[in-house]
Amino acid sequence: MGNRDVGLATLPGAFFVKLFGFSFTAVRLSTLIVAMATGYLLQRTLVRAGVREGNATLATLAFILSPLFVPLAFTFMTDVFGVFTIVLCLYMCLRAIQASTHRSTIAWIGFAAILNGIGGRRAR
Image (tube, rainbow, N blue to C red; front, side, top):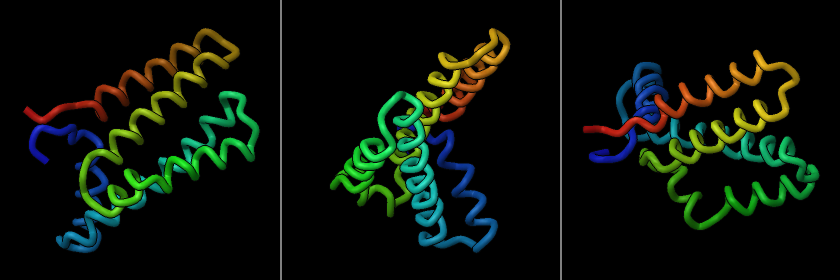
């Protein structure tokens, strides 16, 4: 992976290697699962941002089925993990904006900061 962010990519990749033994198919499967989770989370983020359910689903399909995202979902490159981190941080920030108490706002922002620190880590 070289100079790319490897924060979140190592966790599911290592889990699938431990579960199925080392093979390129196992680590590619971990990326495919994260890609599916990205699609679900993107749709829910758009709905939480005020987009109607049908429009959010259409926008998510346009993103997930794009010629850039589909090939990367079947490789063990870190681009899918980076998009997942961005969408998850955006979701947490939306939750912080819509929170009803100061304590929950601080908690959501704290979770987003921690995830950004883990998922945005760069290899040295």
